[in-house]
Image 1 (cartoon, rainbow, N blue to C red):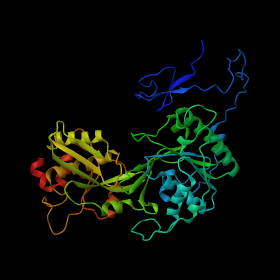
Image 2 (cartoon, one colour; image 1 turned 90 degrees about the horizontal axis):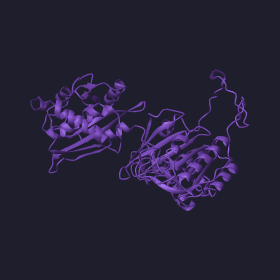
Image 3 (cartoon, rainbow, N blue to C red; image 1 turned 135 degrees about the vertical axis):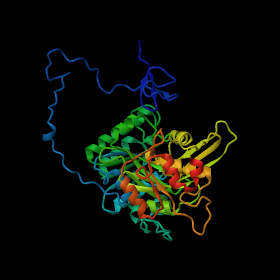
Image 4 (cartoon, one colour; image 1 turned 60 degrees about the horizontal axis):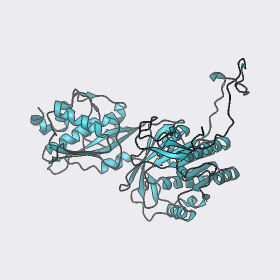
Length: 481
């Protein structure tokens, strides 16, 4: 019987099946199976090794294992990108021969960030190469001219108010053919190469359109081989799905050495760079940037920026969060209003929606604050995501403050000659109403004292959620009892 000329491949995980299925057996996703033309096997048909072949299997000599203590592990110097926030997330800079995948929503600033990095590297004498498959060379030049132009005014930015003239010296290749790109890399021998983006690269030896599962998998594999062989630090720009996950087969994330996510909202100026995978460093670090007219500028002290913008009104508290090894103060706002819908709405931005539902349930059961007939809106200001459990107490205090109309740390009316200092807090809320400790409590407290915030509500000071409400909302004792 002749073998089918087409196969069905899952666009999420790369699972192959001979027929179409509604749900992928590999990852369980629905509607991700697409039909593609089957590729011919590259090698001959291998047979089973003959009996008694010993160290040889199919004619291939066996390898010789080495004990780990006998393996030499030289320290490889990293390439500094010129942006401290990027180096922090990478673990100290780019590693020669590494393969980095950078993902983010369209228009978030991925190309601007990489243009800035290449400009700094080129100015430091590092050989660079920018491969653009989505934009023409003229379009990339316009962006580089914006980066090279000195700003008219500082405007309070933390970064240096100078133009990046070396951004115009970066060599560029506007090409989508993979063979041409690899030949150029082998000829130019850059130390750092950017591929923007991996979904636009096309291998003519394979069937399928650029961006398909087979194309992305083969393109990434070929680029990884070149990067390891020539010690070229390669950065691949990847598209994301509407859910925010990296597009393409899951094998792409397993193939690369580092996976970076550039997060934020296009309507806001702040951007956050995080690492979800890093073979050469920690995955807990985060870098904060601000999008300005001259490009992305590092926010060297994000806590000062966020605390300075705190509203100091009912429904607003300051969360002492941790971004890796760095404490970060961000404002958490809440709005509680009567609802005409059943069930009422629960809208949140910057925190997990299921975590919000848990906090609201604990507030109703153990603090006497029911929101079953009210819409609840929670927002982490600045487009920052607070995914750690230590954000539970900030959400609870913000919702309680908004529901009762009491300014945290104030006199309960929100009136007075001077607005009260913002109340800082951190802690995990348990299902029985207790507050649980979180990591790096001393560093969180030190960061709050550094900016002279008001009372710091923590599990060490308040063992239960009721105690935290009495401390942060002093005029709410009667209602909270």
